[in-house]
Every structure is written in structure tokens, then in C-alpha cells.
Picture (cartoon, helix red, strand yellow):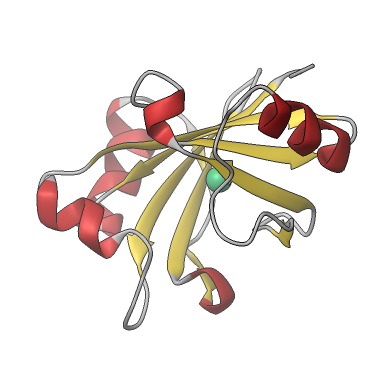
Length: 134
Ligand code: CO
């Protein structure tokens, strides 16, 4: 059911420093920071030949990654995003298998303008999983 790895998201306490590390030390192609007020994050996109890395920094109050950074002040992998062809079919299959879909279970429009859902980390070996319909 799941397809390509769309991105790995890393929560970072210092976006400029993280972007500099990916651009300089790791020699990757790195975007300018982009505010995503609907998602409570500022994002830097790191373009790799086969996938993307998203460096996430909290934006505004009630950012969904604020609690994560409070627990992991030096940052860490926040979620993995897998592509699916049909997000509603994927959701229904996952629910039938007993997996927990976060929120109200309805897809939201994600940072790339495509429908996304998040799955409970406790059902997936401690990894928060985002599904994105492509
Ligand atoms: Co994501």
C-alpha cells in the first residue's frame, strides 16, 4: 500500500544552524525557510536525489512540534512521510487493521498542498507516520 518515502522530518531548535549544517557540512541543496502558519512550523526543505528532508522549527503558539522539542531539546527525527495513491482507502484499511489515525481521521491539506494524515507512533514502532496522497 505505501509507496515512496516522500520525506523525513527533523525537528530542530535552531533552523539557521540546521540549514547551515545540511548546506555546508553535508553539501546538500537547501531551500530558504518557509513559514507554514497553518501547520505551526517554519520549514527548510533539503532536496536529496531520492527524497527530501524537512527541517521543522516551531512557528507561533501551539506549534505541534513545541512539545517534541521540549522533550528533545537538541532536536530529532519527528516523522516519516510515505506516499499513498488513495488516502481514504489507505485510512480505511489501516483502521480496519486496528491502527489509530490521529485527529478527526479526515485528511488535511499538508505542507505540499496534498491531503495528509498522521498515524499514531505507538502503532508503528515509535515512529510518527504521515501519509501523503500523491
Ligand atoms: Co511531513
